[in-house]
Image (cartoon, rainbow, N blue to C red; front, side):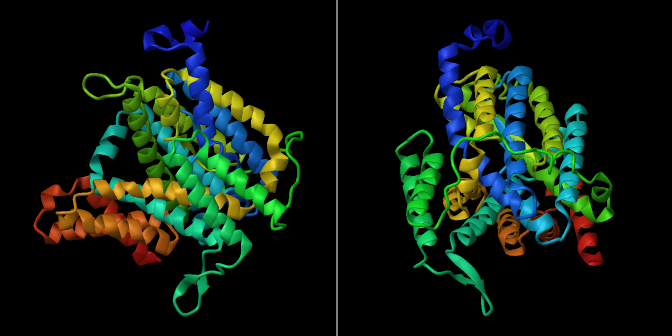
Length: 429
């Protein structure tokens, strides 16, 4: 049956290898079941319900990707998108988390539409590579400042806006040690390095009395506090257009980059470098974004950590299905999830930030019309605490510099139109 469903021999793999690959992928991304509830709980969402929503959304999405698209790519609520949801849309802009969930649902619907229609490639290709890389790096910087804040390394300062925190505090010291150990374990290619470091810092915090142990295994909490709580009427409000666009924009490029990157490592691209069954993969991603918002979590997307499973031999959707099963088993780990403090997950946020900032290396640093807008875009995200504002500043700067430098032909019409719309938006604030 598995051979018929996934074509194991055709892809040069077997059940044992796929199971091992699935377990490897799961261990590299399991941190999301602890990090995501902590981030979204800052909006007032029920921690237990978000934990269940995270596990269920990740399980269903990964299984759907495995069975429908037959790719070894796991899915879960995206890092960066959850921070934008909590700290910008709800925390900074003041919208309720129900409205934010509605915006996530609408972005998923739009993603579904452009995945069905032949316009997705046109949208992706219209955006200059420098801005694509800058968006990824900017989200990384955004996560970085949140991580340092949660760890207590930085704190608010009335004179300079931000300054150094209390480095003598036990949680801050544990977070710093955890990050160093995590990076070292990754360098040593230890499977599950991130989750090992998170649990290690948590245990140390409990022993030192700065964290509370609530148990390990219990029946799953109720999903009711977040299930179908999205506010679609509020999300349709004209003020949320840029928010919906930001969710869509980031998910679109993050998903495309992950699919191509993981498929390339797995040797799944065709002779022209294209990804077979791309539409199925995109449909899986967009559909699951809608499902995730209905369950009560931020945008669900493909995970680059799937590359770890590919390196372990995963080649088919059976790898993703194994990940799905493991996420379902995690439903019974709710007490452990509530035992993990913010300073224990801060190292994971900072490490993911480091991975995402690597995108800046792929920018053309010899062309000022390319690297200047990219840097503006990346810096604006953490400094304005908004991914949407960073994207807007990047587009406006790109079009302005290109036009004044006499290189109007480099500007794609779609980019120019978006830049104009962003200018109008800021003018009306």
